[in-house]
Image (cartoon, rainbow, N blue to C red):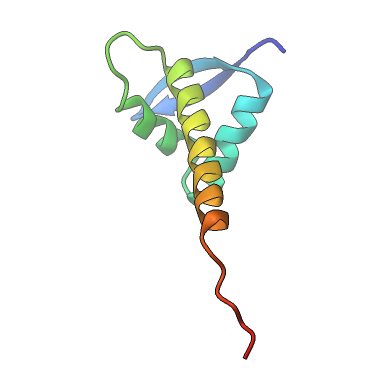
Length: 87
């Protein structure tokens, strides 16, 4: 799937990023889970960019890290021994 241009406002400045539908939907989902407007989350992500990394790439990596952290947390939770409730 080809990326689509999406408009954002970062700290009062209009910009655009080219993201695939799946990454955009995931980014919006994460913003909703965190109860943040997408522009605020994008500005926070933008502030973490290093060097000449593009905003779209940084958002993709943010989304990837978010879901990898979720998987890791789920794996850690399911690998803990369950306490017996027999009494």
